[in-house]
Image 1 (cartoon, helix red, strand yellow):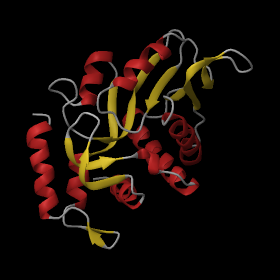
Image 2 (cartoon, rainbow, N blue to C red):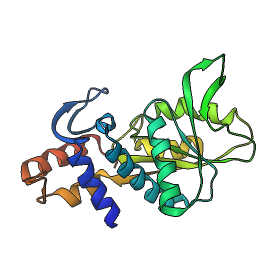
Image 3 (cartoon, rainbow, N blue to C red):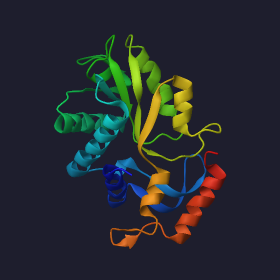
Length: 224
């Protein structure tokens, strides 16, 4: 596993973004882990987060694209932090763009903030985590409405590797439905591999008991 992936896994734990225990998800599923990207709240955390996204985007899509689109609301700081990191790490200027939840009719009008999207633009979408694909359902037509635009792919931070609406994981459903690639900085399989019986923050994060609970969860909800 790449070094930045290992660092990112520990960073999620240290930032209290990735937690383990017993959680009830919006879907009603009882999960032994939970991710809350809203826990990234400091400048240092956002700078590091942008760097991890930048490295993953570089690995999966290269940097030959024009716009990084972050859907409102959590995608807004992600797109800003990551375009800054791409500039710092690779010396490439990518424009950022996000949507508003409501169309603005005065001043900087329209549904978009940041850069406009125009014919010929190549776009990468950035999000925190995707479980149902609902946000892409809302985002896709907004981007398409801007003109003849090529969506290179989607990058999220964590692939939960569980079934979405059907028998596939959400990222696979997005690939099949919309025809563009979808990837994550890390998968839950990589998280478990890295943290199982390994000390992080002075304690074992995933011990035998928690590993058994995660395995049982994927027996029920994992992608076959």
